Length: 224
Image: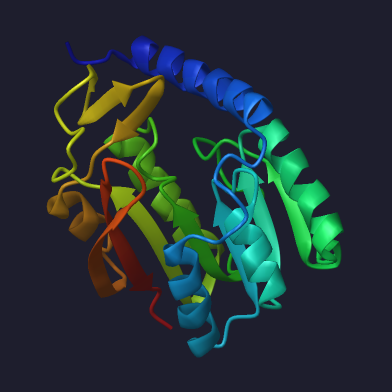
């Protein structure tokens, strides 16, 4: 059965609580090594001349910390205060705390940043959380607002070729829940629509983790 607006709000609240408890029970759950997407993004951002990065959905910080070690100034946002506290502790331990700032933020709300204030934005599997298509478009509109002209946006999402697509608990709008985690699975039409008004540089298919998860890594640039 498709979700109603009320169901969507209930799902969002349940997901916030689930991530908080998950990070508390499993500190550093994704390990210390950066994702392959972050390694790619750091190279892309450097090639574009970026010096600062906004990461949305930073979690406990494996990728934000990698960007900081690569000498980017990093703004890390996530709706889990627990995950961000783990990030700050790790930043201090790794000697990069001076290059990392954090903010508890739900991407359903406008970003607390000025227009054209960041060079690059990274979001690893953030857009494929329990967000409606309308909410995803709103997030990307906010990314566009805060990016400087010529800025680069790299994001990854699970897609409809993933083994979990169409299984588990259906919440409507291509959102399916497994083990307490709700995922919005992307089709290519959604990727293309999110690039409207941008330069779509690359859509790269890859696999990650158990199952394995099947994802797209999308790179798009804001026109100057």
